[in-house]
Image: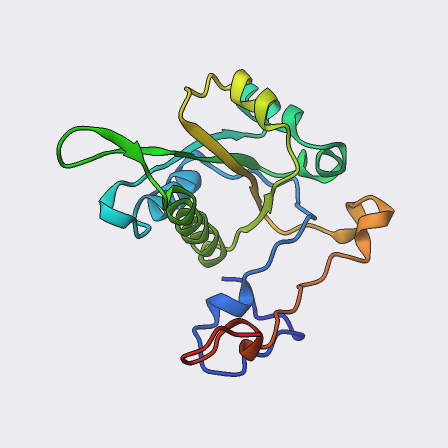
Length: 198
């Protein structure tokens, strides 16, 4: 597992995997194996899910795969500048409808919420495995959906870069200064007892 960065100090006791996880952009050229990826995907599989619908769908590729190249090609230019060095790319999508107990198809209002839980599970398993992840929203959803033959009724949320930590010096100069673990808002800004925070 990654060490807790020096600039991250929780105010209350939590397992160290939470402050240790962050989203670097610098990846080494070390590969990730299929077995390692299956471990991350298995963690995502066990994420909590409303009514056990499990709406998330993941498409992934290892660097050198045609699938990796397809996913990389959909990224914004700014993300392509560093994400191509990652060992793997994962597309996070979810089914927007669910089958009711009576067999009818109905909107699933929690599909995005549940898929976020699957992403978190993948990210924490990666950290526990000595890997790093970085989620990206900067990609062409329509282009990627077409390239991957995503059926109607699915929403694409993010592309996740996965790999081993690398040297920030390999990043484009404009990104090097940003290659530090981010801080979090103070807890009272996001949580309050009995009233809405803020």
